[in-house]
Image 1: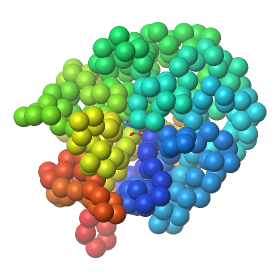
Image 2: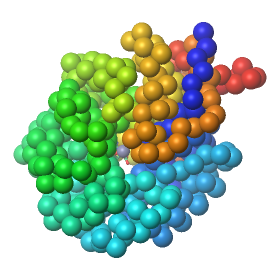
Image 3: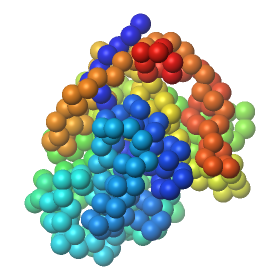
Image 4: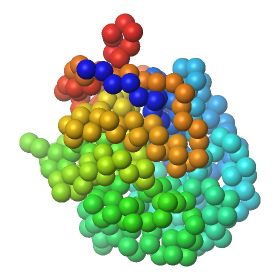
Length: 347
Ligand code: NCD
Ligand code: ZN
């Protein structure tokens, strides 16, 4: 069985830099026409000049003609309105990413309290520049499984009351509560959903032992939430779209006494969603989720090319090489039911 869709886009992607980027980015460029490139490098991408120079490095590493990186800026307490104006005027920058300080990998320079940046957020609203949000509270007193739900009620709702026209993408949602919030919000609010949050629940982190490669942030949730995410992703609702949050970390940094958060999924960035939609009996809605809804939200043209997927299983390698190091991909050593169809029939 084959399925041809408008070429998809990945609306949330970490590609790192240097040698690491060269190892991971070709997987994305072979599948997606565009990807929103997260700015959480070290140091973070905080200026338009830094984003444009990162963009050049991304294009060089993509090794595929026609791949378009959509750049983001990292919101810090010192982000100025002038920077926002420059970003809004720059056709290569698509939004500003807010990592609450301490919420996740490389978030220490983020903003703790968004009320301290209201003038910047208001400027974004006026200029129609989207705020992409890692939606978790960082209060260590709040249970890690509750941090996203708490964020929605304690931070996002009040923010949207103060800046109601702000365009927001609640990234990598993991709960039924977030799905409901986004459904009920205005057309200026949307969400991305990752393959791991559609495929796994939190028990997968502890299956037969501790599974560091299933650890990401926001952390996997209960089966009830996973099911709800599958429902909204496959519902055809244009507020939900594809964002892999593929977040590569070297094997040694994952398999550690204090392992890094992040699941690498770019090697199967569209195939994993095809499995989910197929299992839900909703293959006819994959194109909307993967190729149409995101572009519509961001006000971009649809891609003109197509991608053909084929229901023919392939085995994910145990590891990919990154220089002298290894990277363990999502679903390592298991079979994925869908592949990208190429004329040679090779994966
Ligand atoms: C991301 C990373 O490693 O950059 N990790 C993750 O678990 N998703 C950061 C992020 O998006 O939270
Ligand atoms: Zn991310």
